[in-house]
Length: 374
Image (cartoon, rainbow, N blue to C red; front, side, top):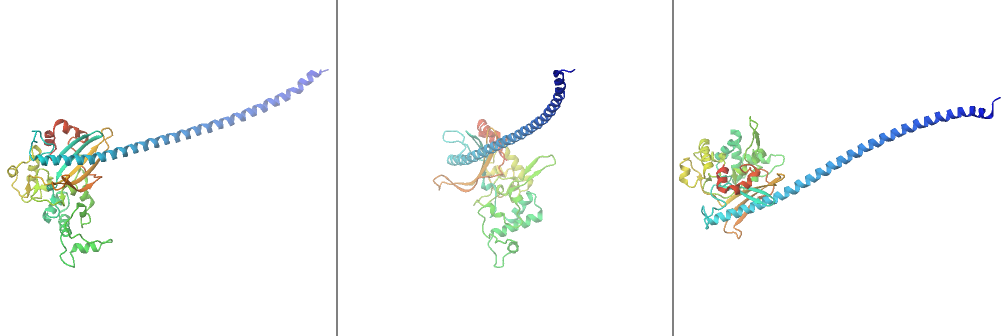
């Protein structure tokens, strides 16, 4: 006969098994829930990490952009300071009127010099000096000269001739009440306008002329078969509206301009450029020994185009500013600003690149002059 203890043991065995299976099911269910929670935590971690990286990149980009803007503004104001420094150099050179000052030192600016360099605490500044009489006067040049200039810039013969006639019509008084064929063209445009029919005061007034393209006016970049990039000069470097007289300054004029002078050709212009790369023309006799053409001079006018380009010493950020000034004793300041361009994109590069500006002063202006005449 079974005792009560044995009966109780038999009764507890099924209950114990039931509780064990239930506990196992509960433990399995809990493991799955824990796994899902772990995956959710991992995905949330990944999402937060991606957001943190994106925020970090955005902040870093914004900081770099703000730094570039700040450095760009600094260089723009330094470039403006370079213009003022160059004007001061021109004024002191005009006061000296010789190759040596009263104390026997060589002035900062001399005949034929094209570049001035200044070292500022926040960057280096190279200023290109261009007398306005190194360009053709757009109000005085004959249509044949203008056409020859456009051909030298790569414009087709027929288009060059038509553009030259359009400029001559634009700057001249209206011949009759009926107007010219160019007046009829401007009147038939979707947004018609009237021709100027007066001398130009700024070069930008050429943009509405029939046949004038922005590519020709602002210059264009071209790639050679060897992969080298060159830029045709903008018209502002070849034409001027400033009141100049006495011929084109051969010490500064571009070859395209020299080729348009009476009696000149490409070979004569090349000889002049080759000569002035060694030394500037000092007298008319030196010029006549190289070329027999006319329409040229070796003296500078009181009008100058100054293009100052400043570069940050660390980042290389740069800005260019251009000014048209007249050196005149009639003004209390000694000069008069006739034009100002705060964001000038077509600055030529100083010899040796932007980082070589300090070498001008370190090596002396004489060596820089010989290197930079072009």
